[in-house]
Length: 134
Image (cartoon, rainbow, N blue to C red; front, side, top):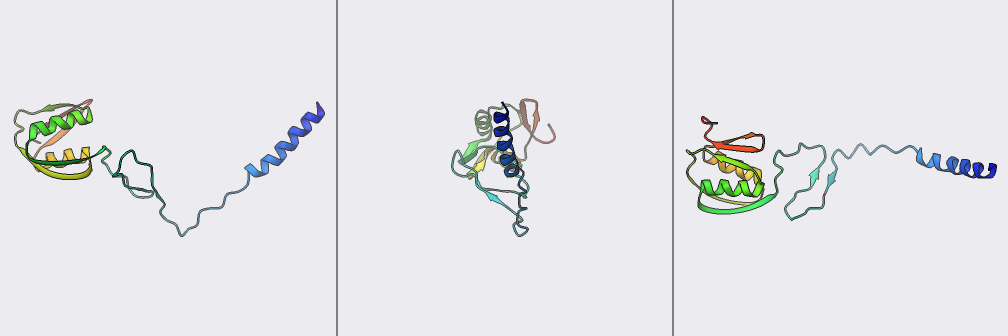
């Protein structure tokens, strides 16, 4: 029993200094660290620590639309993002855009702004319409 205790004590005494070794502080010359995360699909930019994170977080999409009906485009976004969307009856128009690897939420906001529209998120529903009606 004493021999077993001594072996355990020796193991602890050997392991503790290794675990408690002080770490060197990072060099002061490096103010930013660039980390590339593995991407599920191409188009994800590397993340730079210390910079503000963008406000758009949707999956990147590419759109090439010419004179597409605005209501159909909005319904496509609702299916893509699995959102419940209510579109005001006054929403009409067409969309002509060419976007490459843009987060879907940013693409939606750009399309809405270019048509003088906005959106309000209410729980799990998105209402789309003119700013006066929202």
